[in-house]
Image 1 (cartoon, one colour):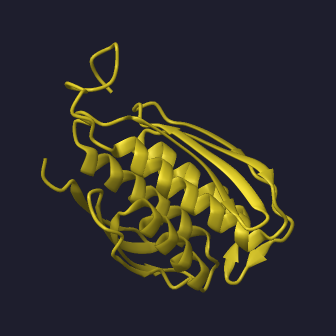
Image 2 (cartoon, one colour):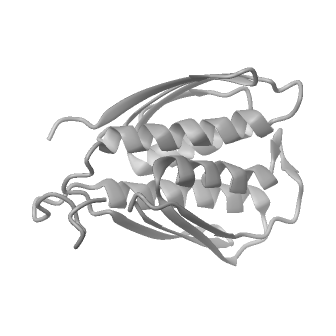
Length: 196
């Protein structure tokens, strides 16, 4: 099977976003959102998921970081869905329990076409760099619903908010890598319904 790639261009009065992803890449990343910590998180997601990711954003950062982060989530979800096309022969499910120093989190997903989102993550500060911690939930919610993904995050322990957020993005990358992996034993899609 050839590389599964997608490009999405989305322009609104609040953001202009160009994003491309290769699900069969090697972790090559070129990301410029205007938010340093968010760039770092997207880089961590793509490198640990072995996705080639390019993101260019012009956002209304003079307002705050909300529109930029949420809209990138929307576009990333759309790109993943587009790159998967028919979802033929994918594992569909992905899971990762990821440690990062004192932090331990779980990310679990089902690329079922039916979006659902659960997020049980406590933050103890409002911001990390120029990134509002409440935007972690908004970003992953946007990915989940624009992709059609059942996505769950669970907190076990941890105290450093940078570590906690980074663990979530890395866990998401690893779980997604597992979910989109091709299994030659799967003819069509992995569903008793015959469709995803």
